[in-house]
Each structure stands twice: as structure tokens, then as C-alpha cells.
Image: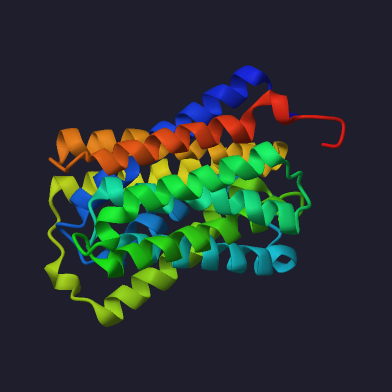
Length: 295
């Protein structure tokens, strides 16, 4: 991966996978103490404010007048559509099942990167995409049969679509903006929008300011939406987006395990079968065997 050493790339991917694996189980805990839209807005806004403060001595690199459209579009897809739908979906789905559905995103990124960014597409990579989709369908089968809310599954898919477009959009425009300011501004814009929307539509007095909520807000805003997102965007900017995104298929593996151990959620045979296919998908998309002179 050009621009980063192999060691830095591996450490970056490992950090993103671990950070995001913990995000949804922790968020599900936080949602017991706050309405979903206010929770999403507060944690996103917190991450944006702290990152902007950290970058305050580099304000010239913001270039708001030149880049505001990029910030707004990125906020719309990567924060407002993605995060808001996520928090509502978690009200209806177990965190493990939700996370697996959300991480159809790597599959969609492969397709959109091929169509929009003109990245390579091979038979092995296409096979990996199909296996990934099939794995997601198997994991979602319980919900499609009515045991889990269909509304929750639809919201999770909306989250995945928003995140997909936002990811490839950032990849396409990464050379025009400072990568850390992009994360800060998309979180500030999206956080303000969702917090204001939550104040208008939800009961702010129902928020229970207890330690689990505060810790959930801090983790989600600072670690997951701040540091991990910045690292992910950096990896995407210097590597082939389909390959980088495919590694996030590993997030459901850890998230399902975390949900089973700490939240008492079921780890079913269908989830296990879906994860096996996801592993196969990652291998096919990233295997060196598919690289040839045409790529």
C-alpha cells in the first residue's frame, strides 16, 4: 500500500477493526439511557468538537470556503444517513446481527469503486463480492423470517448504503482536503444537525446522565467516529479502496463475539455460516493470486 509502510498499514487496520468492533455493543448500552437521535448527535458532535480543538493550530488547512461542499456531502452520507440510521436500527436489532448487516458495506465499496473510481475487477474479486453478499444474507435470514424486526434490517441497510457512498466520495476527494479536518467537519456538521433534530423530535429530559452513557458517548465520539474514522480514511486514501474496505468484514466477527459474551445475545448457526463466507470473501478480494498485469 503506497504511502504507508506495511507495518503501519497492518497496525492501522487492526486498530480500526478493534475500535469498530466495540462500537455497536457499546452504543447499544448507551441507547438504554438516551433517545437514539440525541445519542447519535451528542456523540458525533463531541467527537467533532474535540478533534477541531486538537486541530485549532492548523486552521489554515481547513480552507472552508474552498471545501465546504465536500464537508457537507461527507457529513450527509458518513454521519447523518449512516449514524442516524445506525442508532435507530440498534433499537430493533441485536448489535451482532446489526453489525454484520452494516458490513455489507465492504462489498458495496468494491462495486462502487469499480464503477466510479475505475478500480480493477477480476473473477476472484467478483466471486469474493458474491460470497460476501451471500454471507450477509445468511446472517440476516433470521430477521427476514420475522424473528427480528424487518424495520431494523432496512435501517441497517440504509446505514450501509450511506456509509458506502460516503467512503468512496471521500476517497475520490481526499487530495482536495486535509484528512483530519474532513473528519472533524463532517462530525461537527452532522452532530449539530442530529442534535438539533433530536431536540425537536425527542424528549431531552428522558436522558439519564449515568456513567454508562457518558462512557458510551466518549468512546463513540472520540475513538470510533474520531480516531478510528481518521485512520480508516487515511488507509483508504493511500490504498485501493476495495482492499482496505474488505478487511472491515472482520468487524462483525469480533462484534458478534462481544455481543454474545457481554450482552447475552445469541450466536446462531446462521451467523457462524455467514461469517465463514465472509472470511472466504476477504481472502478472495485480497489474495495476491488475482493480481496480474491488467491490474
